[in-house]
Amino acid sequence: MWTVMTKAKESGMTVDQIFTFFKSTGGEIGPLDFQEGLAALGPAITKTITEDELSEIFQDLDDDGGGTIDIDEFKAHCYNIPRLAWKAEKIRYEREKTKSIEDAAKMAEREATNLPLTPSGSTGAIMHALEDHHHQKDGAAAANMQSKEVIYEGTKLFWRTHEKIDIVMHEYSALHCIVMCSYNATTDEAHPNMIINKTMIEDTIEDEAVQEQLSAQRQEYCLRKQIVGRKLTDDEEAEVAESVRRGILSNYILLRLQQRENPATGAAEAATELFLKKLHLDTYEEGSLIIENPGIATMPLPPEKKEKVNVAEFRKMNAEIRRSSQELGRLSMSAKRMSSIVAASMDAFGGGTNPAAFGGISALNVTTRSGTAASIAVKQKVMRALLRSDAVRDVRRRKVAAFREYLANSLWYEQLCQELLERNASLAAEDKEGVLYEERGVRADSVEA
Image (cartoon, rainbow, N blue to C red):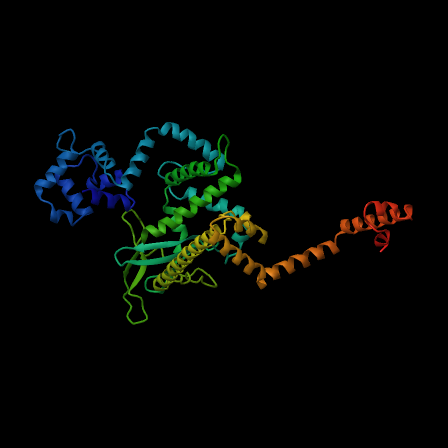
């Protein structure tokens, strides 16, 4: 029962329209009306349900036990169906209870956005007003007959055939049509373009539904942009209105887009084709939404083929990354073991694990005075071998050469040498007989030299 009612709701029917479907002449639903209406909505259910079960369902809906189901009892049951479509319908019904307050708010919003005030139940007026407002914002593009803009780009999955269709919708405002380009990503084939009558879609959209979406979109926009305590600017209102307009047009088409077997034959033809299905509430004839080319010079191309993920290559790369990670782990463990060996070797010479203790070769001389006599002798031999090694001598030579180069380029060292020369020359001039130098044990001729 829930499945049948949910399918009816998802097809676009309101709860009042579903009630009318059971009792087209008005009034209340009787047992026979209920059985006939349920069979029309879900023919398969009458084959799987017994008369006793059907009578039990009818009694559940008949709350007052009067033998008939009125509109209030029918709504109460539908609004308690735990499905998303009915939850949304319940929210709409609860909003209607405070319609007097909401009408005042909607009146102010319409005046702010210059939308026409339309009577209840009218269709098409607001959608056309939104389109005219959009054209005024982009007058140059609207004047160009070939001007187009993408109003939708996405994917639709068809669960029956397990196929994924990439879809792009191009709107030609001046030609009053929408070109839908589609590509079957599952079979790697492009479907023929559909040219859809946009004016017919706009004429069937209820103004009240558009107003509700505008109100909801404004609230969502204010929350997303964190707008508090002020009205939306004209540009912000235009952005909200255009988003609603595009969403209504694209969702209208996507809701009716279906697959069927392609009557064409041949290996090059696709196994299925796309078409727009006429829903129960649609007043136009099947297929009338599709029109001939109204003058489009160059048709837009279908969506491009997306590169598929190579799972085998990904797994191979992932395995290579894991092998590299394991190799790095093994190298890291080897480095730790080597570090432990070096640290133990340093401990044997008494230096410990402090790197500062090994700032130079002189740090080794303290190790030759600790330990047993045998260990001291071994350490002394190691010390002499190290000091005589080419590596140590090379280190010494490089350090001496670096220090000499540093002194040769040092200004303060040059000034110090100059001051010493001048001082010695002054002392030598004052003590010509060399008395001061002889008292200090220094020969005067050595100073002159």
